[in-house]
Amino acid sequence: MFSIQLGSALSAGLMPALGPIGTAWLRLSMGALILLLLARPPLKSLGLRDAPAVLGLGIAVGIMSVTFLAAMERLPLGTAVAIEFLGPLSVAALRGQGARSLLLPATALAGVLLLTEPWAGQVDLIGVGFAALGAIGWAAYVLLTQKVGDRFSGIGALALTIPIAALVVTPFGLPQAFGHLTWELVGVAAALAVLIPVLPYIMEMRALRSMTHTAFGTLLALEPAIGLLLGMIVLSQSPSALQLLGIVLVVFAGAAAQRGGRRQKQSFPPEPPSPTSCGTANTAGSTTPG
Image 1 (cartoon, one colour):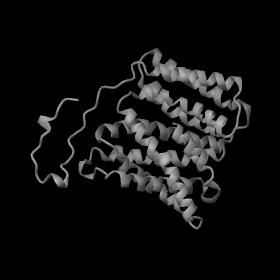
Image 2 (cartoon, rainbow, N blue to C red):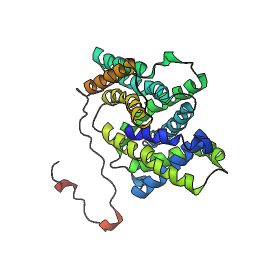
Image 3 (cartoon, one colour):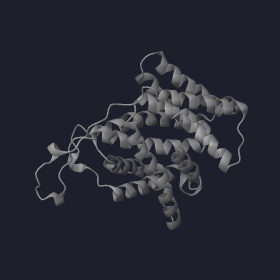
Image 4 (cartoon, rainbow, N blue to C red):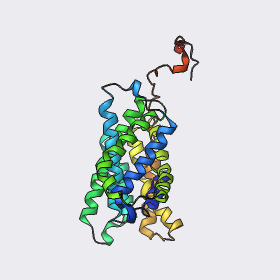
């Protein structure tokens, strides 16, 4: 979450030259290249039943990247994050069981409202619309990341989905960025791509292999708090008493969501033998426990 918020804040420097969609496209494209250098896409393991989830995740990532930057152009960073957080918050509420599963997201939502204080200023409806689309994309991302992460081991799945996201955004982002690209901007975008999408998506996929949607979705309530913390450190912003209370609420909800939030360990299907195996017999039966 720290990586996402820092990368998003620093991406604001590219938007005057490339626009929000152009910035999202260039950042995703650089992220796709980095992931393709780190891992080969598991194309041989990709079945027809996997294709909808992988394509859906790529589309969700593309929607999230574009709509968040578009919303951030019109809304304060904390407000945009708070509205988009309604997506994973809804996942946490709907997938949970019992009153507790509803109470914790509600507590987190109260904290988000105190953090962002939406009643303190005028609302940009277009910005809110972009953030609402981002909330839908974020909810789909949480659900599909766990499904795709359970199907493929390592980070190979991201080497499939991030290029898909870049391709989805290309028809809209390339025209906006065309004519404004410089080697300096490409280098900055490559550095930002490490902050988002490469590092956070790798870490989130690993997290979703170990915890439930409810725990993960409620923990994401910490993201506006991290944005506020970066505002204090980087921008010398001072939170109000209500915002400090909001931090306490979201931290409490995030910590409480961990109780009963661990999933059973997932097993992965065997991967195809590498070219260097030279037809070596399968040794899966002799694998040591753990």
